[in-house]
Length: 351
Ligand SMILES: Cc1ncc(COP(=O)(O)O)c(C=O)c1O
Image (tube, rainbow, N blue to C red):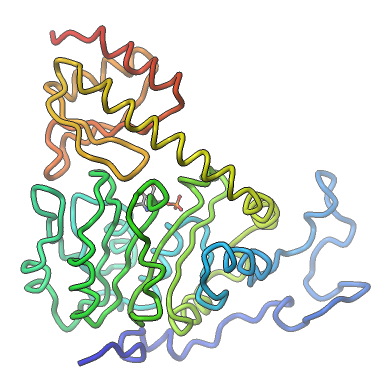
C-alpha cells in the first residue's frame, strides 16, 4: 500500500469546480476596475479598503516561502490554523463515514472541527508521559481513517513528541498525518517542514498567533505537497485572508530578527518562571515545556485557579483533562506579569 491522494479526497471535492472570482478571471493591472461590484467611491473609514483582497495571497506566500524555505505552491494560508483544520476535514473526510485519530490530551479544535463536520473521532490517549501510544494508534486505524492529528509541542502538556514515533506513523500510515507545530518556535527540536519532500501525506500546521505575536490578525499556515494544497485552495472561501491582515503580516514578516529575539526572551522567562514556581509548597510537578506555557501540577488546582482569578490573574484550569488531573496551564507572560503571578501565588494558603 502507499499514499494515494485521489483515494482519500472526498468525491464531491474531487469533482468540485471552485468559485472563480473577478480577481481570478482578470490578471494584471488595469486603470479602472468595474468587475467585482466593489464600491468605487471608497470607504469613509479608509479609502483603500474598498477592493477585495488577493484571493491567492501571492505576496505573502512569496515572503513566507523565503522565510520557511518552502516553495509557495506548498503553502496554504488560513484564517488562523483553525480554518486550516476545518478545511482539511471538508476536503478529505466524508461526513458520517470517515474518521480521524486524535491523541488526547491535546488541542481541542481537532475534535470540535470533526464534530462540526460530522466526522467520527477515534481518541487514542497519549501515554502518561504524553507520548504517542503507537500500538493503540495502529489498532485504531481502519479503512475510513483519513487523518491522524499530532501536536508537537503538544498543547496542553508542552512536550515535543518523540521524532522516531512520528516518523513511524509517517512511514506506515497512508492517510494524512497532520502535525500541528503551533509552538515549534519555542522548541529546540527541528520542524518537520524540512521533511515535506519525503512524505506526500504530511501536512504541517503553523501559526502567526504564537511566536510571531499576531493572534488578533488570524493567520494560520498549512505546508504540504502542492497537490494537497491545491485541494485545500479549491475549498477555502475565496477571500479568506482580509486585506488588513495581508498588509500587516507582510510588514511583520520583515522583522524575523525581532521575533527571534522575542522567542529567546520568552524561553528565558519560561525557564525562570519554572524555577520560581518549583519553590512553592503546593507545586507538585512542572512538566518540561518546549512551548510558551507550563503545565503545572498543584495540590489544589480549583482553589488556586479561583484565588488567582480574585487577584485578576487568569490561567487555564486543565484539572479535568485526561492525564492533567490537578493541573493548571500557565502561559509565560512578560517578566513583570510572571513576577506578579509568583508574588500572588506566594500568598496562597489552602483553606
Ligand atoms: C496546538 C494549537 N494549534 C492551533 C492553535 C490555534 O491557532 P490559530 O490562532 O492560528 O487558529 C492553538 C491555539 O491555542 C493551539 O494550541
